[in-house]
Image 1 (tube, rainbow, N blue to C red):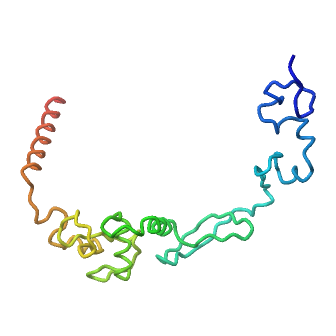
Image 2: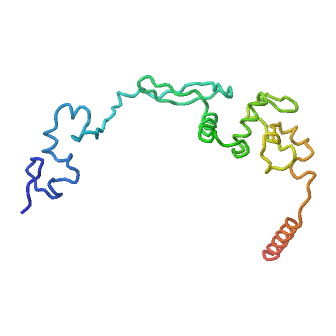
Image 3: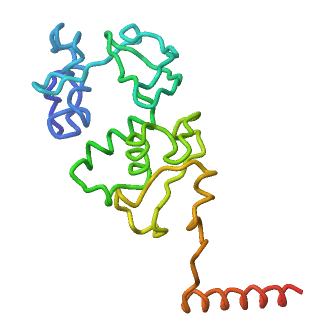
Length: 205
C-alpha cells in the first residue's frame, strides 16, 4: 500500500514521500507556504529564492543615440533601463577591444591580434595616416591598413608596424608581393596546381 503524500494533500506518494517529482509542486505543500514566501516567489527552501519579475518592473525599450568617447563615432542602440541603470556609452567595437585589452593586458605587443595592434598604433599616431596625415574617416570605415616596414608580415614588433591609408600603402616598395621572389618549394606548388587545373579542364571537355 502506498503511503500518503508528506505535504498533506491526501494523494499517494508516488515519488518517495511526495506526490510529484518536485515537492514544491504539491498542492498541500503550497497551501502551507506563508504569505511572505508567496510574495517573494520563494519555493520554501532557505537560500533558493526564485524571484519573478513582472512586466511592470521594466521600462519600455527605447533607442538612444550615443557618441563613443574613444573613437568619436555616433551610433544607435536599443536599451532597456531597469531601476535607473546606465550602460557604458562605448560602441560595440571599442567595448570589445577594451574587454580584450583587460583580459590580455599582460601579454606583450607582438602576441596581440592584428586588430588590437592596429587600434593601438592608430591611437599612437593621433588617428591619422603616418605619411600623408589623412584622417577624414575613422579606423573601421576608413581605408586604413596595417603596414609592415620591412615587408615581413610575421615580424609583429611595434617598430615594424604603422597604419597607412590605402593609397600610401600601395606606394610602398614592399607592398603585397612587390620586391619578393618565390622559393623553390613555392614554385613546385604552383606548378602542381597548374597541372591539376589543366587536367580538370581536359576531363570536363
